[in-house]
Image (cartoon, rainbow, N blue to C red; front, side, top):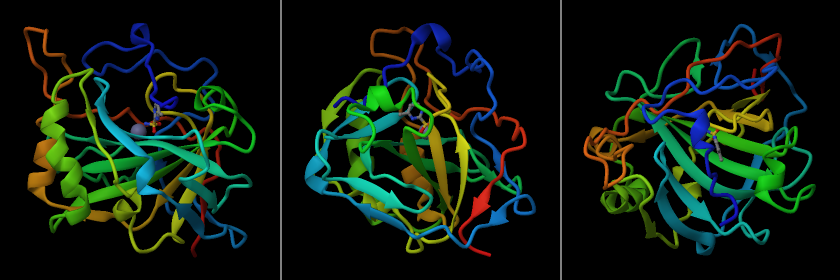
Length: 263
Ligand SMILES: Cc1ccnc(S(N)(=O)=O)n1
Ligand SMILES: [Zn+2]
């Protein structure tokens, strides 16, 4: 689907080194969400997601994470409400995680690290025709961030976990259908933080309205261990490198305001 983000390899080294800085980066991501600095905004609305599992297409290891990609050629899987003025289309979701359960998330809350973080990536289909267009536009994208914590096994996630061995190596793809990503959302969709930021992997464009949910979802240690069994490297490479710690270093807030939908 159009949203599969093809990274410019020249900007990144195989082993997840900090990519070239985005020129003039005034609104880079990820950041620490300081509760003290966040401002309650009573005008923020609840988030409205409508995802159609029939738009789910495939899982792809792109060498930095594994992406579950959706058909975004129609308005079947959408996000609106919250801080958003327009309707956004789901194009993919992916995760970031650590080598152990101590760290792995990209965002933190008062410096609290989670073992992993889910990103549901949407683009503004009211204003743009293609994901690749929206990715270059200020506020062309809206990404929902969900923290993962270790606890009971997540039954909905298990179908995806069972598909991961098929995409162990970079550039591998496997068909994956009828998956409803709303099973990965916590009960509370009306408690979140939102701020203006960027993509956290190349092209690092400052196009993202970030919406970070306050309530984490629980997954088991064994499920996270399967994430860590993936590889950054392709089948041809001699030295195989475990896909772990695929998060970006945190970026300066630079005077931005973080708004909260709850007091
Ligand atoms: C689609 C896409 C590309 C790069 N980075 C991200 S992320 N990690 O900011 O969600 N998403
Ligand atoms: Zn991400």
